Image (cartoon, rainbow, N blue to C red; front, side, top):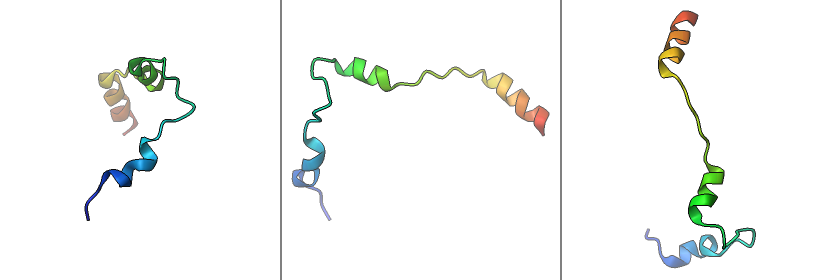
Length: 50
């Protein structure tokens, strides 16, 4: 089985909800999740529970 551009036609169409004036980096920034975890503290918590 091989893939051709026809296989991706439905995914290549522009989304009418997209704002073309919004830079891609800003659009991706809206989707990003900033997670800060103190891994040492998390490991200690797990060890205490065990």
